[in-house]
Amino acid sequence: MTPEVTYTRHEGPDSADALDAFLPAYEEIYAEPPYLEGPRDVADFIEHYAVQAKRPGMRLVLAHAGQEVVGFTYGYYLAPDTRWWSNLQDVQLPPDEAREDGRRTFAIIELAVRRAWRRRRVAATLHRLLLDGVHAERVTLTVRPEPEAAPARLAYEAWGYRRLGISHPWEDAPMYDCMVRDLQRDPLATP
Image (cartoon, rainbow, N blue to C red):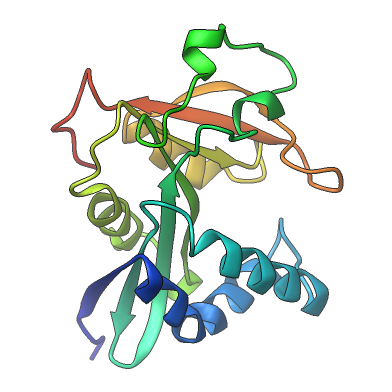
């Protein structure tokens, strides 16, 4: 019998303490194509997560099946000095659209589910619980371009996201599609 999936949400400093709980899921998921991450990538993730866990509005949601974490998502509000919008390669937002105040935009950094638990609405529930209580104008995320992450892209589009442009978040990073969902136009929409 398949165990029931339960969810826990961690906020602020509590999210930093939860890394060990979901790291095995991260390692498994991101070892798969198209990511093919190895030990160095995982070490980089751990280092970045320690910094991200300190950001304002940080929240993490874990999906559990028994004692095993089968999925996770986390994000935070973009800071006024964010480089998120300047990473766009093919579009330049007007200054007012790129302006951040620390509460305007919530960024989803990761949303991932172990293979055996996909297509069971785990990702949709993680997404909904992450955004529950977020008071922002919009939500943004990045996703690998077609066809690498077609299932994820289809889910995001079904949840109301639209493609804004191509993002190159750091020097050695691959290109991503930056997507945005306007919460003011559709604040009650749930995936």
